[in-house]
Length: 195
Image (cartoon, rainbow, N blue to C red; front, top):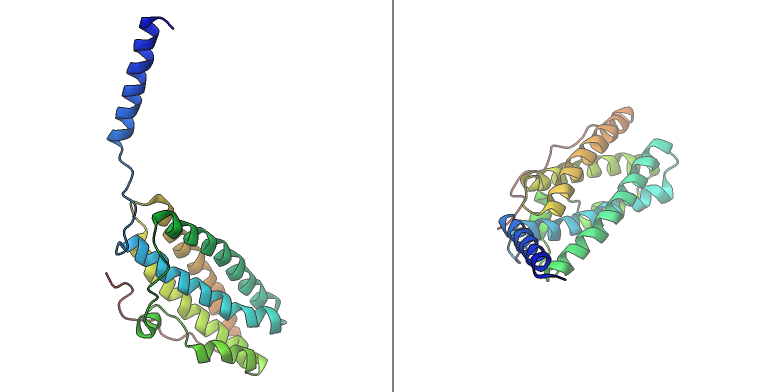
């Protein structure tokens, strides 16, 4: 390689490196960053969505309701895999999990409410699932809103996806609940994140 070509290659490498430096990647989220807190809490939230959906996939014969439960299960299983991978990549653990009071503020159901979906008479179980899952989705949307402009592209995409998809699912579930003569419970209130 002659000296002129070598100098040109070196200059282009330096220039390329300079361009990369001019667009810094966001720092890896720390243990107490909003991104890490969001992912930790959303893991717990998604795990419960699977637990809420499982009895409906096993028990319900309503095609529309089963379709919603299946969509939630498949979508959130995929997001769970992604989020666990992010935490591992950031060197963060999945702990601490939210306190019971914080879980309620996130729209989560109690262990008794989840368990009852297996034992309630089916019409009551279906209505209860819809009420619990609407509230659960309201909590997820509230948790996701502040992260829609996160500097972490992966987290930003997930937050926007959760808001869009879960709002659509809430509309469907509200219709299914109204057909059954039921109404949704008020959305959860309280802090969505502890920083």
